[in-house]
Length: 162
Image (cartoon, rainbow, N blue to C red; front, top):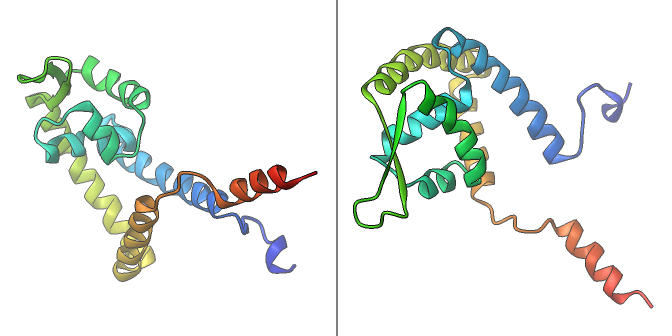
């Protein structure tokens, strides 16, 4: 079997990244399960904690999410009493979020589980390789990818057609 025929092989960056993200997401979801949180919820609670009562738009930007996806992820956290929203004191149109004391306790519980998962992942991959992976993925997330190059070329070709 050549490289291109091996299961899971793909020259598509998107497909390969999504496959890895699903695998790693499942791993962290399983690790966090005793806390009752999913990885996305854990990440959101953590982002709220480190951001000091951020505006919803700021969280969405930091996590590269649209506001509707953020709202969808926040709903169960608000329902369960982990997060509360409130109007900005200077601009009442801006909605801010903060952890409740119950949310801080839940995050503390989940952080212990996350640390175990993080350590297990780094034991399998190596701490240096894991750090390089995070740096590479952060660099990808910071790229300006407004329009895929292939789509632009297709569009240009269509414009030049007789």
